[in-house]
Image 1 (spheres, chains in turn purple, green):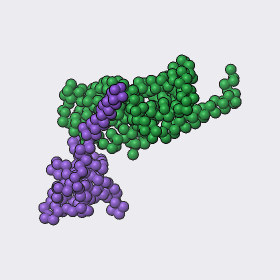
Image 2 (spheres, rainbow over the protein chains, first blue to last red; image 1 turned 60 degrees about the horizontal axis):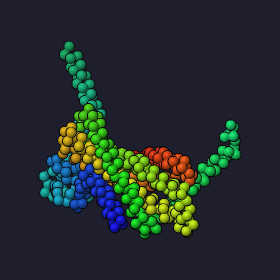
Image 3 (cartoon, rainbow over the protein chains, first blue to last red; image 1 turned 30 degrees about the vertical axis):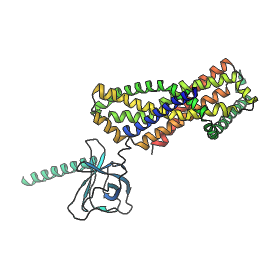
Length: 163
Length: 261
């Protein structure tokens, strides 16, 4: 009698603990978004990936269609090579282009795919050739200042000639 | 007065400390080795899980709830300055799962269960029950210490998980129900930001290590104490102090190892 009573309480305790772990994994974590659906891998090369990280979302028209699998630096071209896992169910044309975009002003970065027009689809191991790098704020500001300076210089010389 | 600084005395102290360390390491190795025998007599382990786990559940749940409340309030106060109060769920979940859950649950466990382990074994020693067991050719390490040790190791991760889960619910209550953060953003930001293996899994590994640490310190202090009333009370105090310090120190080391890469 005593024995089975303790066992019931211990069982209940273990059950509560297991339920808590399950809650953390499913409700707080992303176990459900780790889809086990079959995927195919394509790669893309970017001049600059900014803050892109492995497991970042890959979206097309705002819908998540895959995840970034791995990021490495190509030793010969010195560009960033990004391997992308795409859902088997979604076929993209071979001339699809990839952009690195930012969610919100300070949000995390993700890859946006824009479908092309070719008939043949992107296959596993293919490479996306048309890419657009992440926007790096420093170079953007640098370019802006450079243009500004160039404009000012042009205005100076222009006014000088007219005199 | 100068006796304290005499080389012979210092040497003796160092030798005794080394002996303590060696004895502790040997006992830990024996306890780890006794996993098999302990679980073959599962009833003893189950009784201890009931004693350590079920009785600690109340304090863990209440503390977790209030830690979650506070995290919800403080997190909202900080995040709304940056206009990103939707990230509240992510902040509450990450701080609980990665850090506060394992550490605070271990500190509470040391105070609630570690002390009673030390006092119980200390009193057994003071009442010469352990000596009597040895007289009957029953190994006290196998019969008394091993079931308690393994029960503590099982219990700690479960308690830490309960603490984190209840804390997240507490953060949800304050953030979503009370303050009015968007519930969809609360959960979706949490789900996209918390990784099952990197965050939840490593938090569980942490709490497993803390379970070994706290239970072992408590058992060692009880087993080693002077068999007198003062000895038992000193050992109980040392259990709380040493296991809390060990948990905080180990937490730094484990965090540096797990999350720095």
